[in-house]
Length: 315
Ligand SMILES: [Zn+2]
Image (cartoon, rainbow, N blue to C red; front, side):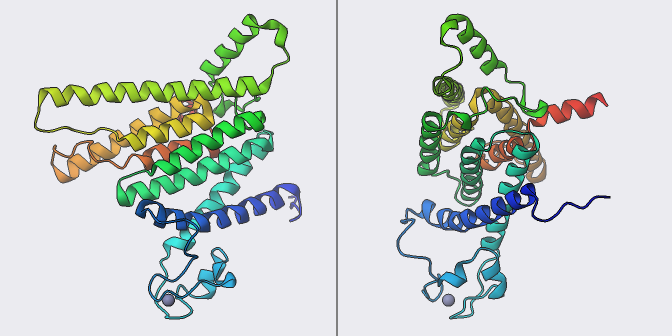
């Protein structure tokens, strides 16, 4: 059995991805606490919520500081929530897994900035939605702006035009568009990838707009029938979150992610209904961001969930 040396590129790359993820995770803890409360992300600097003691640099090292302090404030000895190191560890592991997927499939590292941003945003959105039942606009809009900037400045950061591994294929829409473009403007080949990246992004946003229209109409229907109660299937924040995912990954990936989110939401909603034996809360007030985050993170780490289900069924 051959043992890989510790300094081989993947291990080092994965270590840096993990370290970077845990540092971003540390900042994400601040985002998750302050953003839904409308507080500034930069001011005041990190401090103990119980005694106000400013966190010094050595107390701010992801995961390690919490362990060194044994989960207590160095000043007042009050416990520091385990959620902080868990958030740092989770994002570190997710960044390492996303990087591993890209490395293993020989995909360009240019995909990383967008994938990292989306991963962090979804982890924050899921946590905030679970606690506060909102997804802050700032989180969704910032993601969409970053996706637009990446399309313009780093067109290779998108999935379109990449030689994707089987679980990430099934790019029906983008392939049709590329084929149509090849016919329509044969002379412009080889592609201007910035143009292709922007088209891919716009198709994603178009899909999100269609979702928005569908849910807008669905909400109107029951409201007209029973005037007393207006049910909300999906909030505006959820739809903006879909737009952010679609802006990063394009329409094709987003369709499978939406299917996954709908399936998870349905299973959870049904289980909740059977558990509480109440129909009133059926599918209303579901925190939808975790259901969107799960299939998206699965896509980033492994590929299309439906591909694996299909493969398992064929066996
Ligand atoms: Zn303290």
